Image (cartoon, rainbow, N blue to C red; front, side, top):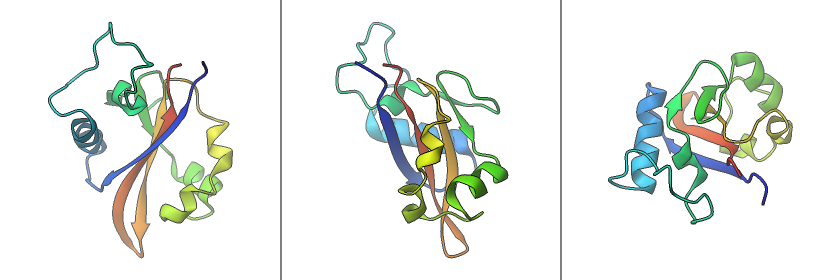
Amino acid sequence: MGAEPFEHLVEFQPDAQSALDALRDELAPGESEPSSEMSFGMDRPAILFISAVSSRRQPGCATPLTPEEVLHHFGTQRPTRSHTARADSLWDELDRGSAVFTTLYVGERPRWIWFAGYSFD
């Protein structure tokens, strides 16, 4: 079994860690961390294994896309939900067990934070 891609949207919050925590709580209420004994094949959303926001890409973390990466992958500095479907080049740059995120807009207003990544396995 190989790594599977995942994408999730959460309402925009200025603090990305708070947004990630809210998303994790929405998907698995009451679970702060997945169990180390838990199988990855138990229909658990892969985002639950992303526990922190980090400034550098590393397993188990979500990293913000830089303004240059946002422009490169989405063709704009203010991507919308529809831009995410056309960001094929982004997936080639992601490693197993890691994620990236960026803000998605409606007009000029931040609306969501989009998390995308690959499961560990």
